[in-house]
Length: 432
Image (cartoon, rainbow, N blue to C red; front, side):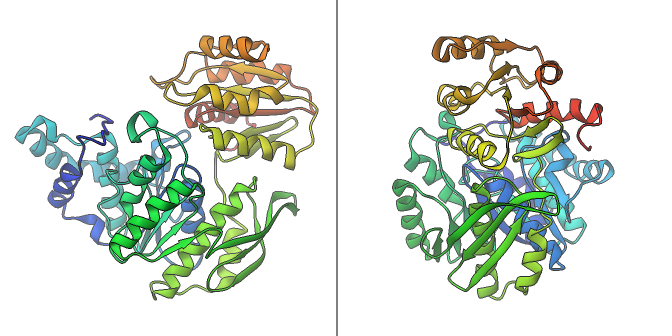
């Protein structure tokens, strides 16, 4: 199984055939489909948490995972079990073998297989709703076989440019591929060229479009602490009404945008009679939402924070959040990236404000060599970065360098965050 994805040669025919042989499990539950460059995972988690709290048996499909592949497939926020994962895979194996025997090129990719496992599991467990996060792009993503109740496109930036394209408009075109005829679209796209593409596709397909900043507004969002829980207090208006003093136990003003996307999607569902849910249930659910790996505090003395940030925009949001929400002496960062990221510009957002820097690499084959990162940091910023062979070694070295009033931030990729979490869990610093 490969990870192939090519916008010029790839199509969904193989995924369609695999699902047909498996009985089209994706047609047995209602779905909400989410894409975007930034915030789609948090938005998906918020939506699934709210739907579950409202009494719906809710599936959640996200990527990547932090420490265990089974995190990607959840039912009512509980990971799929090893037994259920294996059972679904065993159902697919004969179908995969038949496709492979017919034509080796028909062998499903890793992500297609994982998506099919997800669909079979949700069907088997009789999920009523499924919140599906796109793996990459949208138009050609394996999840794009569903006919959702609503499509959500979060903000769009430059990521996976070697695959999706190197302009905002081209990437927006790939993301807008999830838009379906007559199905409402909620979008937080900020750049004019992205909005233009999304508007054009919505007009072509007769899909109602609700935009952040126009139909959905964030009137206020402030850092707030409630019963020792750090987060945001938000006032958000949609075209249907207002939500005042919403508490979200997530850090970063950008999470208010993700919350606004989730509320917009819920309003669209209510407007079209797809769900019944009251505002108090929404408020209660949001107060208990948890997004692992998204500016997540996993240690207190010193403060230790994990974050997935791997784009220029997400690293800027992380930096802003650290200085808005926390008081600390030194900022110590552990950095590790995938080679295909905009590393030079990402470093610009975090290195100037870091006091101590540790660079490392994950076990993923696409990891950027830490030696190259250290050279860049020295050449451009005149700062020394300590090279560590693994995320574990970096965590241990950074902990030695940290005083109780410092802040240690581990970021750059989900792989680095996940491997660091494993070490911190082993130390009993983070919960499993």
